Image (cartoon, rainbow, N blue to C red; front, top):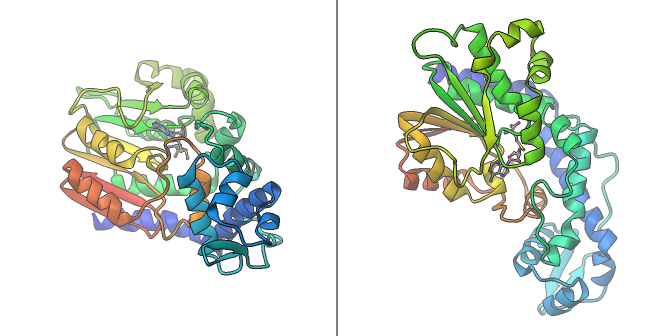
Amino acid sequence: MVLERVKAWKEIFKLAKTRNVQAEVNEYFRNNIIQSLTNMGWFEFLQTPRTVDEIVVKFNVEDIEYLGEILRTLMSDDTLIKISSDRYLCNGNHSIKPNVDPKVFNASIKQLLWTYADFIPKKLRGEDISFSGGINLFDWDDALSLFMYQQIRKAAFAYGNPLKNPGKFLDIGCGNGTQTVGMWIECLKRNLFRGERPVQLYGIEIDKGLLDIAQNEFLRLVRKQIDLPEEVILRYKEFFPKFSWGNIVNIPFENNTFDYVYTSQVIHWTDPIASIRELYRVLRPNGIAFGTESFLGGSDLYANLHVKVIKGAYGFFTKKDMTKWAKQAGFNAISYTTPTTIFKFIK
Ligand SMILES: C[S@@+](CC[C@H](N)C(=O)[O-])C[C@H]1O[C@@H](n2cnc3c(N)ncnc32)[C@H](O)[C@@H]1O
């Protein structure tokens, strides 16, 4: 356990070398939200003190809960708005901070994040925005290969250590399959597709576009990560991961099926309590659920406003909440490593 923890930390340190990562990222999220609200005319409207009812009418708000999230977020930021006699008023400064360009982001993830922020008017009007709807697939495909994502995935694998006692492995919310492919390559290197109990890899994904990439571009994804001739890869065709459509809140497998279930940056997009219950259900006794999450505290309220535009997204939660839900689901050993995100629960 200690060795696994150290290995996970080493991966995260490589990310932390990019100085001021968290601060820059938080500034970026804040800028996006302020830009989107500015485009809607929020700050102009709040030059005059307004009641919630006036804000509701002005912006055709149906989703009162999301409006509450926006108001709470802006109120937590001294420079933006204040409340006096039940009326909200602009505090004077809502300018975008210049030159905020996190080094851990690329053009695709920036486009993706802006798309989410730009959905705010629709979200307030009560329109349903699905994870796949309106999001550019190329941007997700490209963003998932970011160094930032690679490092947290590596850290999760170092800590979860699914190669220690390999068997049946499921990647939930596998996206374009990048990490399932990474696991497949490690199994190939260790000769784990032979013997009496060859490793079996599965991936499920809710977004049909990303699932399509995982299912149909396996060779490209493998060759992106390792220089292997196509004919060598094809020799192992029967052991390619089996990708299918699936929702983490209703995992399409029987009880007690897997030795390991892995899920990275998925749970906050849906119902976390139901998700964790499902992780438990499909694991065999002593099986391990591991992966990454972004917790409130590290991830700020502005980031949360991006996530919560998606229908049904719970948004970020605390480590304390996750621990409570994991215990309620029945997990025995619950542990975390690295300040960011890595968790491991044993059934
Ligand atoms: C930030 S991406 C991470 C992808 C992948 N796990 C990785 O680390 O590269 C989040 C993924 O969760 C998927 N997702 C969102 N809600 C889901 C749900 N309810 N069930 C399964 N997958 C879901 C999305 O479609 C997307 O592929």
